[in-house]
Image 1 (cartoon, helix red, strand yellow):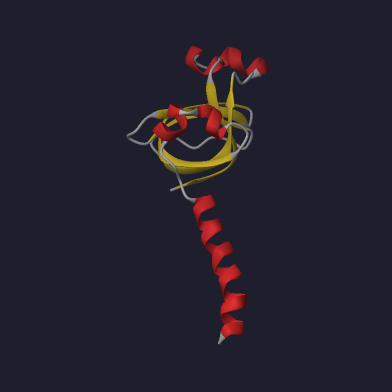
Image 2: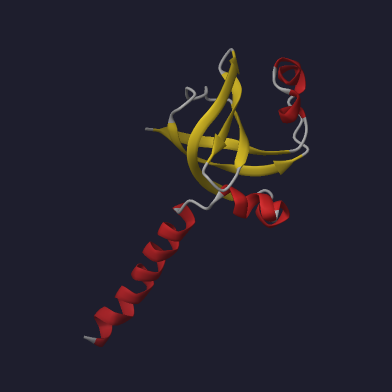
Amino acid sequence: MRRSLLFGAPTLFVVVLASVACASITINTVLADPSRFRDRDVTVSGEVADSFSVASRGAYRIKDGSGELWVVSDHGVPRTGAQVKVTGKIREGYNLGGLGDRLPAGLRTGLVLVESSHRAK
């Protein structure tokens, strides 16, 4: 019995840690203290309010009732109105390069989530 507890506890710890790491946080939590999340993987969920794409790159704005956040993607963008779960890294003052001229002024500077993956519903 003691041996199974000894081996089971670390496994349980890893499962709990993984589920917490994958859990969504509110956009307001990110906006309230962006430096806390800078260069760390963050997962947020919400509805796509706007989306813009040029060739397979683009950006979309998601909202979750607590706030709104722009997401930059190299993997294509979901349609406006879609429910999404997005994982990526928070960046402040992100440079969009030549793509920035084609996107809304509010996106050109400021806080963005650089997407590593998204799942649309």
